[in-house]
Length: 239
Image 1 (cartoon, rainbow, N blue to C red):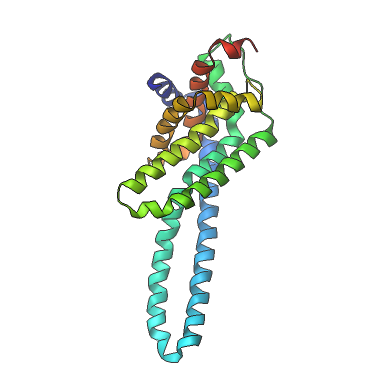
Image 2 (tube, helix red, strand yellow; image 1 turned 45 degrees about the horizontal axis):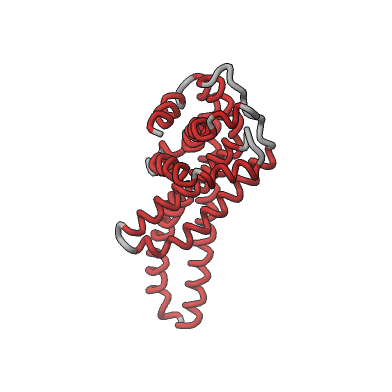
């Protein structure tokens, strides 16, 4: 596991990976900015409408206190956008990975496993479906885990574990689908659920590092190509 992580890290800045590294970072930034803009518009709309309704209900004398409250809420909105973007980073990178799964996997296979059978390109629609499904699953799980974040320490552990499960699951299945059917890839992941989760902890740790986490699709996919090779053993070579 440590060897696979070290290999993935060492490959990230190699010439074969630089192009996809820049593209994945660029797409992740664009999605994060779009998410931030969307959150800002929604939160400001709620704040403005809430202030107007409160002033109509309380009368003109409440204008100044409500204006002060509105300012406080605008500051809170800015903080909420930043926090929301951080929490949504796993979902965003999961979606980004679906666009570059074959490009990353092929580069790993050719540089680390020359002469061995290469995986078949994953249909673009299938890859995007997996990415969107994982992103939606991530959002749903994080919303359920959100109340636990109020519990110091415990909430952070839950969030970290959820991230490890979600990203470990997606990246492993994307790597496995290049050699197996969708059903077989999912079955292989379930058969090695503990190992895949442990591998997901590495990805969760990577995505916890600010700025660096924009490269999560590259690290996660490269890492899971190595993990899949080790778990599948001779099974994939016979296909």
